[in-house]
Amino acid sequence: MEEEQKEDLQSISKIPEEDAPDAPDNMSDSEEEDQEKTLKIVILGDGTSGKTSICTRFAQRNFSRKYTQTVGVDFFSRRLALPHNIYVLLQIWDIGGQSLSASMLQNYLYGAHGIVFVYDVTNAATFESLNDWVSTVKKITKQLEKPMHMALVGNKTDMEHRRAIRIDKHARFAESGGMTTHYVSAKTGDSINLTFKQIAADILGIQLSKTDMEGDIGVVQAPVAVIDQEEPGQPKSVLLSSNAKKLDDANRSSSVCLIQ
Image (cartoon, helix red, strand yellow):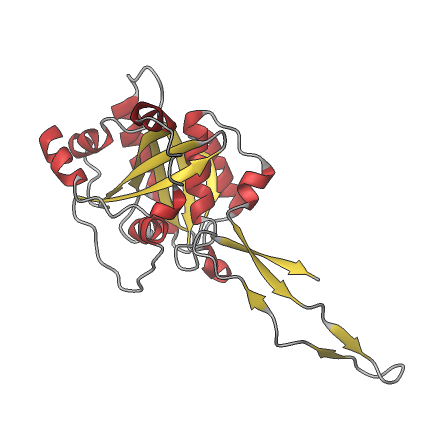
């Protein structure tokens, strides 16, 4: 199995170079190697939860509306820059939703640093099935000296109006399983980069500052609405400028509104 994994890893997606600045010319090979760490992250959950879309959005900055079921495992990777000049290569293993058997998962989880459980916030069945995933994982990893980092990710927040899982239920499940909690939208890219950066930082014991986290938040600029009231007691008309602009930055993943 290890030989197969080595062969599979050779087909990992091309790593975006802009996320890892070039090392200074005067840095030796050994010093450069010391600057980069490699983390294996395994993504688990039902086939319709959007695991592959999350991986594709993160590693390739792309989203496809076409659903293709993952059979076995797919591989993705990307470099991230963390505080203190630490660069991390995330090797992401996207496990097919049909791979719940303990024997298969044991091979996939070998050498992993973190596990991400994904569900669709609009589909209650994908959330309920996480009980089986978490139970199987804990049976496999119970004898490890150091527990793996585990994270709970609710996907498809762009469809909030169709939410089927309450936020407090998500929070309770994460707390009971000792997981960090995250929400993302693979479709819009909202919080994708930030989530993986937080997971990598948690695994390495690095504290992200507010500035570090804000670096992965896109900004939407929009003018203040102008209230026009010609006569007292008359309905107010709202005039909005059409110059609202969303900054399109592929390295930033969520949006906030900046009022000027």
